[in-house]
Every structure is written in C-alpha cells, then in structure tokens.
Image 1 (cartoon, rainbow, N blue to C red):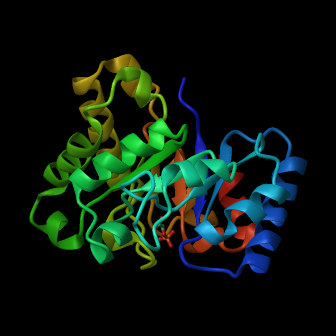
Image 2 (cartoon, helix red, strand yellow):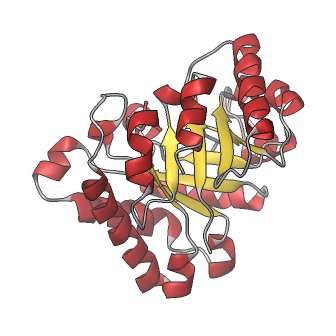
Length: 252
Ligand code: PGA
C-alpha cells in the first residue's frame, strides 16, 4: 500500500548554517521518535543540499531540492540540473510548485521535461498541482488539476509512476493561513486518485501517495490526514520550526 509522507518545503528561507541546524533538529527528532507512521522529507534550497545531506540519515529523512532545470547541462547560467541535484545525495525534487508556475512562468509542457529529467537522474518527484481562488470560484478546479497532471505526467509508464508523489496545493491556501477544509481537500484528492485510476488502473491509483499542502500545521494536520485519500502533507511555513514540523509528522 501507499506510503504516508510529510515533506517540508523550506522555500527561500534560512542561511546554510540555519538550515543545517534545522535539518539536524528534524533528523534527531525523527531518529528518537517511536513508531512513526510516515516518511519524513526536508525540501531545501540548492545551496543547502550538500551540507544538509551530511547531517541527516538519508534512510530516515529524505532530502528534496525545490526545483531543477529543464536541461541536463550546458550554457544555462544560474540553473541547477537534475543530475547535479542527484549528485548531492538528494533523493527527491519538488516540481511544479505554484510559486514556480506563477512567478517563473513554468508551464505544464516545461514541467513535463523537468519530470523526465528528474526521473532519468534517479530522483523521485513531488509534483504539485492546485487551483487559484478565481479558478475555484469559477468551478474550474477539476479542469485545472486534470490539465496539470495529464499534461506533465500522463506520458509516464506505470513503472516510472512509482517514483511520483502528488501534492495538491490550492493556491489560495498557501501561506495565507486559510486551510482547505478536510472535506474540500478530500474531494480533490479523491478526484486526483480517480484520474490516475482512469489513466492507469485502480492498483496504481491506490499505490500513489497524494499530499495536501496549504497552511497545514500541527493543529489541523490530524483532521486532514484522517481523510481516506490524504496521505500526508507538503509543509511550507510550519516546516521552518522543527517542533511545529514534528507536530505534523506525529499527527499520523
Ligand atoms: P504553507 O506552504 O504551508 O506555508 O502554506 C505550503 C507550500 O507552499 O508547499
């Protein structure tokens, strides 16, 4: 059966020394916790990957980059490729975050390329999707999610799909303190699972981990994670304090 996962997305926060401290604290808390019911991942800036890798036990705490380039190598000043990320020892990459789509014009087509390069480099992908408030109010939630997932991911084989984790992140809930209700989130998660079942089969759909992201915190995590199709969270703000992050990890 599918894994439960709680993944931090630090975004553009912390210096390297601060990030190393935070990663150490998470690693120590995970190492000493008894009977955790989920995998734990930290998603960190590119600059932090090597240093964080040194202070975590990668078998207990996964390590994610927050993006990778849509090329493998070459004259792309300032970009960081999937093989470079993999060479740090990281095992995941977050792709398609709404901040990347919104501020850096990442399209479904470009993300399809990034997904392919990440998988080729041996990384697992946490693939984000989600609607804006305007799209929700216009009744377009399912259309947006269907387009994001099918255009960037549905060319993959069932074998490749084993390395995909989906994160549903309604844009209106990210960093706003406005969480989707557990019922609203469950509805979209069930829809995503049905899309995967239609594309592949029920078995593939049942084995896909689907995370919720958007103002998830210790006080609301348990209710969200109790829903049948919510398999954990992608955590922004609350992943920047080890205690809050662990409060979500232990919500399972
Ligand atoms: P948030 O961010 O938890 O701060 O709302 C979630 C995310 O953007 O991944």
